[in-house]
Image (cartoon, rainbow, N blue to C red):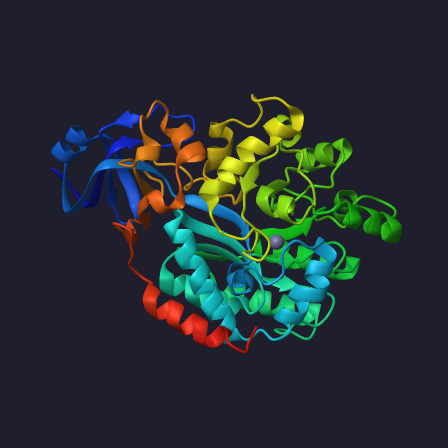
Length: 433
Ligand SMILES: [Zn+2]
């Protein structure tokens, strides 16, 4: 018998959005990677494991990837709701962020990680301030993170200038180089908060280190009008002129884009992080996702920060991603459950240039979640992907593993002391926010 570190067994295994579900499925894991996937009896007869995790009513799925968030903004959850993006950001969020400290960012990030793990999320893309503090938390918690310091033309509580934030980004790239879970990205905030010169600086830094660029793009029609007024073209065309559109760009939102922008993004291989619930809540509109998918754009799924969603729940985000286009276009065939599940798994992995993530196959990194199907709202099970997208809730997630290590074990957080975290949070929030 071959040796494995861990075998996980379940009632059903869904290895990828388009794969045939395996009844009585199991995976064998060694050195942080899947080494075998198949039927439980077959896997148990071929491998001797140090530990066997038996989940008789478990649905095993690839770990979900949140392609856009500002994790530490959990501390601003519900601080200012039901406002237009511009006044929400400029009159409420920016003033609250002026009082940010690395300690608050640490707390908020840990809270976000706890919430995301409980929703079956194994990795996330984060743009925020004091990203060094974020990276320490992600490392300690054991999630996968694509992390970038937010870069602006103006001073932030973290850095006095865009140049200083760029320097910090380069420092973080060298600090985390080669880390198995943490990747540093280059994150200009938006085309309207970064001047052309700063955007070019970001592109050059990303080029030098072969790093991914992450930015908000065309989130609102206000932004579209503002960039046209300043530069005479759409935000997407503006970034193209500056050489930022490529397959190494993860463009978030892309609500205010016309057919020519979608065509341009597809031609340049740009990847999109779609955040439907944040776009709805801020009244920004609806991204033309069916058009993007038709054009061959890789679409991933993000929650955005907890101040504009107001949760980090990718399970409900998949549900929204699948339903909104149906209602908008009065066409129930648009964005299937499989499409939405793909955005949170294989689509995100492809957008992040990680062919070794997003599905459960031998040789791929062992990130997975187990959903407990022994629930009245999850029976019967005709189609497990449909159940995950349309019926499952984050509270149904029983286990989460990253690189074969447990972050959630039978609904108990392994690397986060949840009670102590909540107590510290309440203490820190008083007077600070
Ligand atoms: Zn955002």
